[in-house]
Every structure is written in C-alpha cells, then in structure tokens.
Image (cartoon, rainbow, N blue to C red; front, top):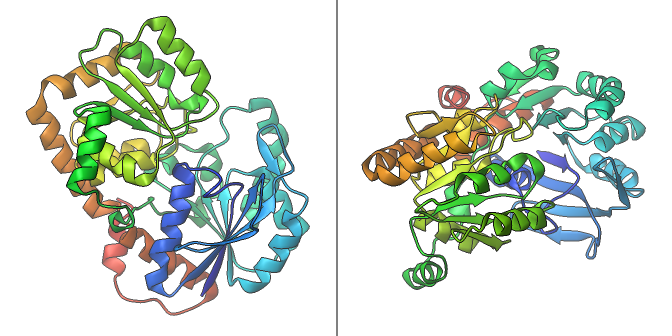
Amino acid sequence: MRVLHFYRTYFPDTQGGLEEAIRQICLNTIPEGIASQILTLSPDPSPVVIERAEATVVRARLHGTIASCSVSLQAAKQLRALSGWADIVHYHFPWPFADLLHFWTRIRKPSVVTYHSDIVRQRLLKHLYEPLQNRFLRSVDRIVCTSPNYFATSDVLSRFEHKVEVIPIGIDESTYPEPGADELAATEAAYGRDFFLFVGVLRYYKGLHVLLNAIQGAPYRVVIVGSGPTELELKRQARELGLSNVVFAGYLPDEVKIRLLKLCRGVVFPSYMRSEAFGVTLVEGAIHGKPMISTEVGSGTSHVNVHGETGLVVPPGSPRELRQAMDQIWHRPDMARLMGRKARQRYERLFTGKLMGKRYARLYRDLVGLPQQDGSAEIAEGAR
C-alpha cells in the first residue's frame, strides 16, 4: 500500500513535533507493508527529491505566506502527480492551503487527515476560513485526533465525531541514536546535569516567557533547546530578568538532544494555549523515564502527562504554580524518580511507535477495503 503525506514543512528544512510525528507514522507503518512519500514546501527545494529512511520527500518551492499560511505555486501540480502514485492521501491539519488544493486538484483517492490542532490565534481569519475548513473536513474519509482529551474539548471535531478516530502519536525509541559514554560525558561537561529541559520550536504558545519568570532565583538551571520566532524576545527577557540559570542551546541534532534527555532532572513543557495539541517532547521524556511538568490546556499534553502519576500538571500562564511544580521535582528526588518510572511504563503501554503504526495501518486498510490483520486488542488499548 502507498500513502502520500502532505504538509507545509518537513525535515530537513524545519524540526518540530509535527514533523517528528509524520516521520514516526511513516517509519512505523513500514513493517505493516506501507510505503510513504511526503510532499512538502521548501524555500530552497534543491534537491527536489530527498530519500530518507522513513519516506521519499518531494519538495515544492515555498513562494510566501499569507497570515502564517504557507503557499506554493508548484504544489498543485505535484500533488496531482503524486496522488496518482498513492492509494491514500494523508493530510496534516491545520493548513488552509492544503484544503484549497484538495478541491482544486479534484483528488479522487481515499483521504485521511490527522487533526493536530484547532486554529487558535487567528480569530478573525478563523471565521473567514471556517466554511472552507468544514467543507474540507466533510469531504475527507476519516479524521484522526491525536488524543481523547483533544477530541473531547474540540468544538470542530465534535461536528464530525462520526468519522473521528483517536490515534495517539507514538515514537519508536530505536529510531533515536544511543549515546556512548564519551559522548554523554562531553555533553555533561558542556551543559551539566540535573537541569530542567525544554525542547521545541520557540513559538508564541510555548509559554517560555512564563518559564523565565518562574525560574528567577531558582537553585536549578533550565536548558532550552530549539530556535524559532520568539528566540530574540526570550533572550532579551532573560537579560532583563538577570537570569544566570538558563541556557539557550539553539537547534541541536537528535544525538545531542537524547544526551540532554538522559542528563536532565525532568522535562518542563509550559505551553499555555491549545495550539499545543500533544507534545512530542513529553513522549521523548517518558521514553527516558523523566518526570514531566506541563499545563492543563485541554489537549493531549494531559494524556501523555498524568498529574500526580507521571509528573505534575499546573494551570497555564502561572509563573508561581510552575515554579512550585519545579521546586517539588527538584527537592523531592524520590518522588521524581517514581514519576519517571511511571512515565516510562505509560509510554510502553500507550505511546510506542509500533502501536501507532499498527493503528494507522488498520485505518489505511479499512479505507481501501483490505483485510485486517490480528492484534485488535493491542490496537484498541492505544487510545485509552
């Protein structure tokens, strides 16, 4: 079976949780007999085709953005051509330009959309876009939501509940490099250990300004891995606050990120808006048995991180309560270790790449009318 994924950005041009989710879907459906291609946009699509372990990546030129929506004059032609190769077209939402091309190219293949997030910030444009959004979601054959929490709190998804299936994002830990002792020692020499770790694209909804306010005078350090639109603003805030206990590490390759996950005390994820729909970094923390701190925004972050079990969940946008949670993880190491063990156990039960791959493969087979394979009980467990 052949699946074409379509999203506005992908590796190697950008690195974020949604890109990693697509990578893991492709990798973990390979054992199920599924080949994938990924059509994406790039400001410099040279080469146009990149062969990666998970899929063939085809890049159309990015010609600009309109209200943060990426646009390409080449993508329609490429989408039409590649959909001829595919048995299923798999969209990743939100991206209004993809909705337009779905109708413009008149694709007649079975279609699925993974609904990663509601549109939160662009409230005026959201109302203008809503008719197209609803028409698009009506037209696709199946909608995948990444957590039961998000499904339960999304007004948009409630309109299409008859075609929604919950498939949490999973990660195959073997796809990440395992560091050697010398590599781990070198990273510890550069960053230390027992710090709190944030990993992600530095965007407005990540709540890092709240985190910086929270750690004033704290006895522990925070390492922030990633780059993005708010980076300069956050660095200016750190200077104004006189913070000496925060490190902006910038973009780091996976091998260094994994070493930092092994060295940290816990993962902190202060996103304060529903734009943060899942939190792949939380799953990465759980893989490494780390306690997590996240916020309650009615999204999948609280499906990954269960308050009092795998970590602590605090109200969004509150420096005081975020600081209290970090203090608990710091001053109560036995509690932190127990939460880390339970985080790892929850990962093994719900968020492995194998389980996600089986559930997507089951969905794909259903769409094209192929017989299902065994493992229904294991597959059903993944959404709980």
